[in-house]
Image (cartoon, rainbow, N blue to C red; front, side, top):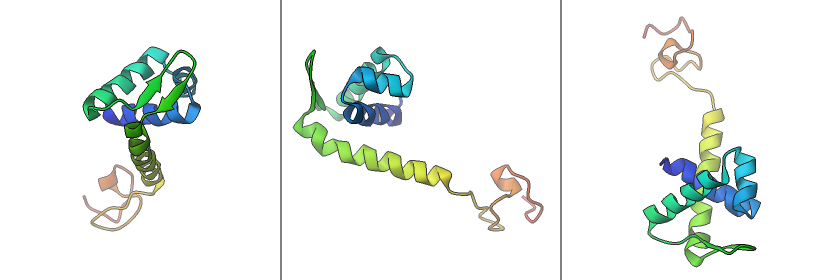
Amino acid sequence: MDRMASMAAFTKVVGAGSFSAAAREMQVSQALVTKQIQELEGWLGARLLNRTTRRLSLTEAGTAFYSAPREFLKRLKRLRMQPVRCRRCRAEDCASTRRSHSACSI
């Protein structure tokens, strides 16, 4: 399973306060969100969330881990919004970045 997707699901669950609300926001099934959280917990070797039928809370490990993926995903989103510059000609729109720019011969 994709770890970035699992981290995104974790931050959504924490932000939304429930698996079902996070699944609705992400437009996926609650089962998929549950699977992503379980995969992330398995990979980290720590339980991140305390779950009951009525309540959801962060464990100590979950609290410690929460800020890292949240900040990482925010930075990644900002980076994706920045224009791509060609290393060779320094233009934002260049053929080497799969856009049309006649200044570069790549």
